Image 1 (spheres, rainbow, N blue to C red):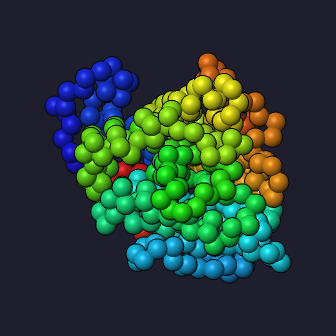
Image 2: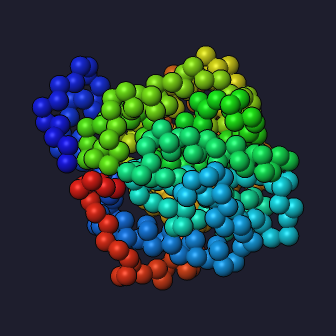
Length: 356
């Protein structure tokens, strides 16, 4: 693990006042889970993703392992609603989490069943995780995956990007993408940024960086928090929903709230960006994604028409306090999730280079 105990921080940003141990703890999401032990929560999360993917591949019309580039890891899985024209649909792209160093499209099809049932095509994107891939490469791969979907399905009814944790960071970087060099402007209609990390500087001083090997310059170059204030939406109707779970760590809460606040203030107040922030009640960093298997989940209400997750929500003003809407009860799990077993799932490491 990187020794950060002697690092001197120049300003009084909250995380810079923490000890190395406290900072590490803040960026270990499994340590903040209250419903299960840390390792059990990771095993459950992985097994639910594996089972959801198995069911999606068995039950839904799909195109698997479709290349969006020449690299071995540059593949997408595309799932379609039954009896629908493939191209003339809303497309929901999902970028998995795993601190840019674990996870796979092959265990990330959580939302396929509820979204395809609503007439939405779902694209699960693979990218080269560390140490094989650098963060710059991952951002480039995700950008090319979005351009690929637009080029392949030019008559789409909107592209919605969703990312969880590290995937939320990658999705947020698409707010900054230079689409001109890719020869296409995607029909982006919405961003779901779920429990993300948007300022990467703290990660430099945690065990996550053993695999990532980020320099401070790398972290700053790839921090949407530092750059999004200068971004302009290609489509002023494009919506951004920043979401965090009640049982995410204080640092994850801070990351999401501050990223929401820094969305272009001048355009946000004028209504050009349609941005919202929400804390989801009674969920942790992993459950917030596990619940994407549910048809009534707030994040699976895309629908074939105007973006459902914002119906009934108020757009926050530039000076809103942290008073996000919360959900007051847990929706029911799909019945198949009650039988998920984690006994045969591989043990996941905690805080020894992959602190999840």
